[in-house]
Image 1 (spheres, rainbow, N blue to C red):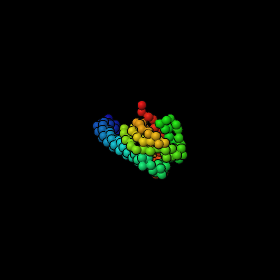
Image 2: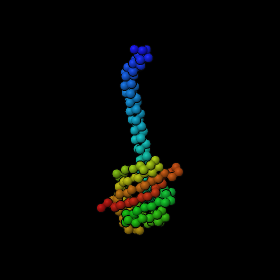
Image 3: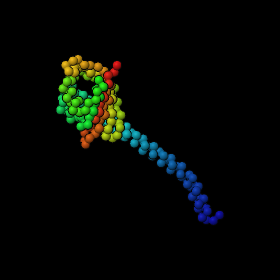
Image 4: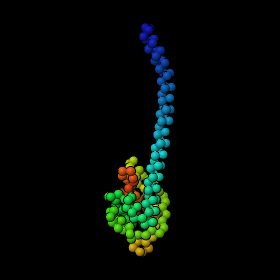
Length: 166
């Protein structure tokens, strides 16, 4: 056998033993790397959800305190709302109706966050509320969906829908 053929045969045999070991090491590195990426993604998703839930809670607390200036600062300019009676309101009408509502008690539960993008997400939850509307008693249990969008450095509420639970 010529010398070149012997070298190629030795090289082929060496590669046959080395490649599986290299592939296994690379696979273990890839699995660790992917596992780390999954952990980071989970941590980022949890931080994202926590930030939006905190914004929603602060907004609801401001509504209870009747802090119209804070509520106004949290609504996007193109804000829309579908109220429990099925009517749609823009930001101006929602803020004018704000003066007609008084929240005495509320309890929020069952939060879920659906990320839409890195700068947008939907918060859903259940709220039990007791208060008045135009001086008349108003209370109930409702589903709420709130779409938040990050504008500049702050989250703004772009859309909300409140649906009574029968």
